[in-house]
Image 1 (cartoon, rainbow, N blue to C red):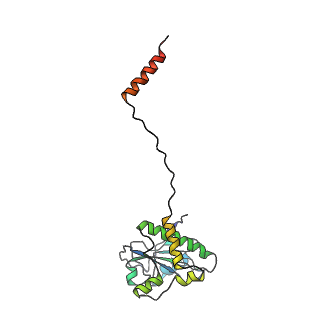
Image 2 (cartoon, rainbow, N blue to C red):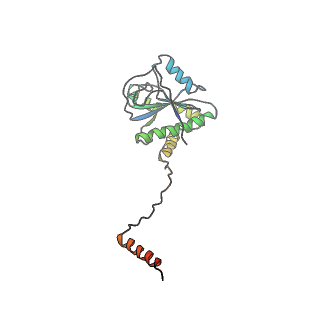
Image 3 (cartoon, one colour):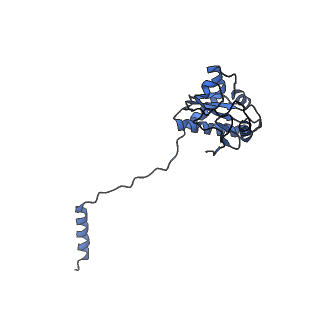
Length: 196
């Protein structure tokens, strides 16, 4: 399974600072029912002093900021080190759609950068590590739906480790044709052509 990523770069709330990603921070919006386009408009239409690289809802994944540029999502230290993915919140079966998309998408990022799940952090984890924010997302959102951060990481790890099934190629045996083989074949042909 794969999903299309739509690029809709925001013009406001941009740092214009270089980012060499060392990990990824996962957020949730705390804005139940608002989709990716709502959040794109929020960040694109006014100075919010916040932003993220990607936002995921039940319909789409949008890239708002290039992966080579810092976003403003989890405090100065995390912003200078981590990509950011924001999950739209829903109180219905759309939660499962976003959950599954996020697992696939974060695993894809990890594969591209050669990471396992060690550099994948929740906003809560980042807050506890550097104390530059007090946010605890997406933990309460996951808990509300009977999910855990550990379970999320486990599913991402499984997705990272999925083997890509490719058709196997059966080698065709090759034989080196020698002059002796050609000579022997010509003798057989000429013997069969001789009139008796």
